[in-house]
Image (cartoon, rainbow, N blue to C red):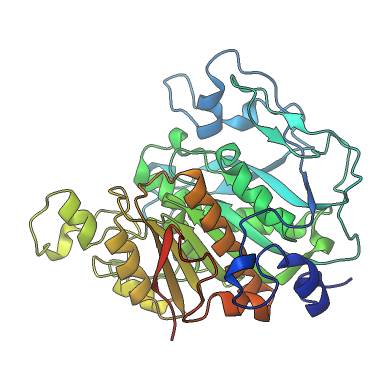
Length: 399
């Protein structure tokens, strides 16, 4: 199989079978995992002794030097670590300008059901996180179909989170036939949110460069079918890389044209009017009131430059990323956009809402990276695949 996700018999019979047995059949909607076992790249690490493991996973600034995950990996050659160079003229790079910072990546991918490699329990204080069928030093990936070229999805997590927190979401995507790349941003080692937001866009670009050229993955990725998914602050990262423009930086785009579609879970889309109301700021805001970050304008007008598909899941009671801003940002997009709002949910959704969000994400990427007709039907006006008791309500979709 040369195009796993692009072959209609495979998609209709396998990849979307857990979602729907026929287009629009709400009784068949399920957020369950796909048909594939999942393997993962090597991220073998030593236990943390000088500080809590969490400080290395999210990054930590301290007088004697920053803490970050790359300092604990057992074998740097076997681990995906990319040095991200911050250009001196990169917008809002601040004190990171001209520096180079390491960024750790993990890759999850479809693997054979008989993959003999054991899961790896990451040595944090809880022992909760397990990387499935993880490669050990010296081992190459074992793909479900060694002749296939898989679509790729890159993930940018929330501010001061790390990839292990999002492991269930990433495994879900990989089980459905995608190579998934997660970026450990290490926000806590940067001077502040402004610099971390600048580093994030560079880190995702560098992650794509690295994996697309890596001898273990290059021949197994379909570079024409790349998507990006962002959680919370990762939404700003994804929208920036999809081409969202900052009115304060006229003529400057940070777009990465390799990304064909974007998905956001409670996605921060920049500073908008709803956030201003939550913070109790006077309205209307003066022209220079937007924060000094890569922002799309309080009316999100800079998002009109994005012509690629976007899907956002918001929380009805979210005060960190108000749902009104998520909706306003989507309406400002220059391309097709969907918004599903989860009833009763805050910035941290419960498992039932997370499961519905994963199902929407699977349908969205199947439609836009795999050109699957059944998935497109699930996104069409009038479709209600999650059923009448769904937590999520469609607030916006293309006509």
